[in-house]
Amino acid sequence: MYVPLTYTSGDSGRRSKRIRKNRSTYTPSGEWVIILKRNREFFRSLRFRIFISILITGILPIIVLELILLNVSENTVISTRLKNVSAQFNVFSTYISKSGQVEGSDTDFAAFAEEVAGLYMTRIQVIDRDFNIITDTYNINKGKLCISQDVNQCFNGTNLSYVDKGHQCIILVQAVKDDAGTVQYVMFATSSISDIFQAMSSIHLIGLAIMIILSIIVLFFAIFWSGRLVKPFGRINEVIARIDQGHMTEDIKLEGCTEVETISNSFNLMLGKINQLEQSRQEFVSNVSHELKTPLTSMKVLSDSLLMSEDTPAEMYREFMSDLSSEIDRENAIITDLLTLVRLDSDSTELNVSHVNVNELISQTLKMVKPLAEKKNIDILFESFRPIEADVDQIKFSMAISNLVENAVKYNNNEGWVHVTLNADHNYFYVKIQDNGFGIPKESQDRVFDRFYRVDKARSRETGGTGLGLAITRSIILAHNGDIRLYSEENVGTTFSIQIPLKHIAVKNI
Image (cartoon, rainbow, N blue to C red; front, side, top):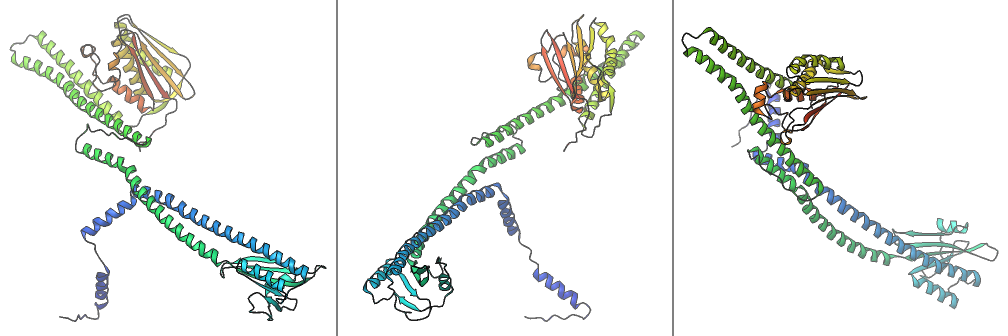
């Protein structure tokens, strides 16, 4: 049932606009949205781009090559026909010049004209100086006037020959001169080349069929290879999805072109590093728990012992309190080192860089370590090859050098030695810390910079280390855009080599 709509004059305009807007607005359903999204993703996909690239590079040359070959073939055939007709035309022109016969009544002239005209379906007309057609091999225009620009140019001494593809014929206009060189007649000939165009049409059809067949082959080739080339990426996506589900041991084994194998190897290498980081994280959490729990356990035992004991002697009480203080200091040292590592690992951490004399800074650092070395009668030798000034954070750089030298002293034999050298070139300065201590086993050298890693746990407990010193040192050197390397041999000694730029450039994470 039709119900008329009535509006007041005040809001009719606004409502009509609202109705028109609602009628023109179409909201696609959820299925259409999914289909449109998939189509958009397909057209943006690498497979589609490879498919189009193969298709264009395969079909376009075929089309261009076919057009060139057909055009060249057509022009070659027509050019050959033009040369042949021109040759016969020249013979006929020479005959007229010598014989002076231009009338069709002459038997020899008529026979020769018919022979030339019939050879290439050529129509020959001879025109005198009054523009009268005195000979026509078709006997159609004989006796009529022929007023033509081509004929007029020929009487002025310009011979013409060209192809009229619109009328599918060859046009030849040539002057016939007497012995004095005066133009007496003009020969006007039209030679049909419709047979050539018919043959070329057949060739065009054959070429079109060949082009379609080759295009279909290229199409299937493009579909096959575009799918084959992107197949490894599908495998990578599957592995990434499984890794996202927690299958961290998944591996990619792809064979094919060099680039695919390179991506596969790089992905496996990255996955291996992720697994190593995860393992290191778990070990770090375990080590942190253990390191923090050990002093707390000791303090708990000591405090419980004091609480359970009655009338504890003052001397024993002081001893217990001294042990508690030592455990608290140890706990505080671990927490301090952990906080230092957290700050160094933070992207927002900025170094307090200043231009300092590196020679003096290292000398001051070695003086602070000297009392520790004197307890074990260890000689510390500092050798500098030249005065060096560089941009460093004095506190953090001094901490890094102090950690390395302290380790060289702690893990050294009594009456050993520590040799510190300083050198530089135009871009970097180099610090080498060498000792003749216990050395580091080869299997442990890759992990000495890990947090809480100890080569010899019993010896590390005795020296009072937290297991974070080398990790802090490495973070400090990397924060200076530098590099640190380790060379060690058991029972021979250890060498740490540091390289740091003379000019510090802050590197922002992207």
